[in-house]
Image (cartoon, rainbow, N blue to C red; front, side, top):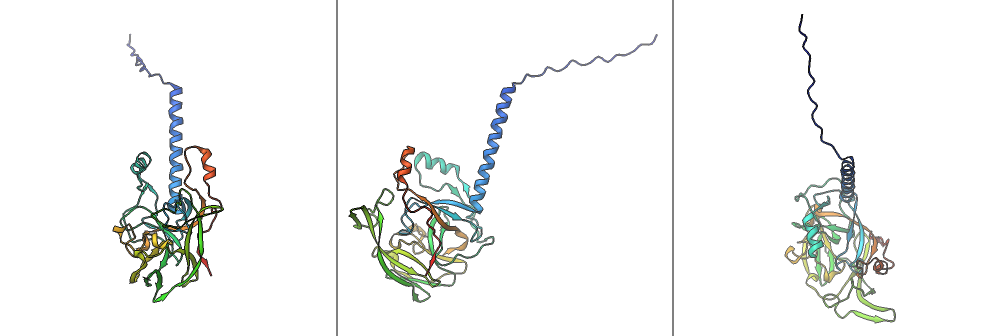
Length: 309
């Protein structure tokens, strides 16, 4: 009689019961996180390579730009450089929201003179620029190109030995509000009261550059920037100034004076200002009912591209 071996099946491992509802919630949450991440990446890519919003934080470009204006800045006209990518700085964002710190919310890549595609700005373009060694954005006007000899004498702009055409125009009447207070530190004693309310009466000089671009500047009297020695702009550099000539930290001032430290490398130009999307007078609060009355009339849609006479 032969023996027959039989295989005894191994006992099945005990399985851990799962909660389908919990698993479903985690899967749904993970899908939401991934979706938000893709949206964030798409927004940052658009900001880095196509266009981004910009907020005017100071009066350095008055009378053409007011504190509280919101703009669209295009990134592609001048190509892309180390200042082009929008890279959030989470620590700075938290400090700004929690402590009111004025530091920038973004950081830049390591400085480089390289630039991908694009062309030089034209005289009269309004651009955003990152000061050498910094990571905040300034907004200024291009007044000098590579090879130009630029000089300021008694408040007059001189290009290549010739004063640019300057015409005294009627004063600009800018309504006084929380974002444009017309206070002691700027425009001393220029506040006037009319039947239509309080205004800041700004003396205007209209400049016309050699390429025919014209724009208004504010001449508020004497300032250290009224005189700047004749300087040849190096290759690959631009000379930038604010339209509010006596209250603008620009290429006329050193980095220690919060200026741009002279002609700025083309690689530090981050984009071209295109138009104003909307403007707020500084009276908004967390209450949504305060938002609509804070909108300034007549500023939305204003083009910032230079006008040629």
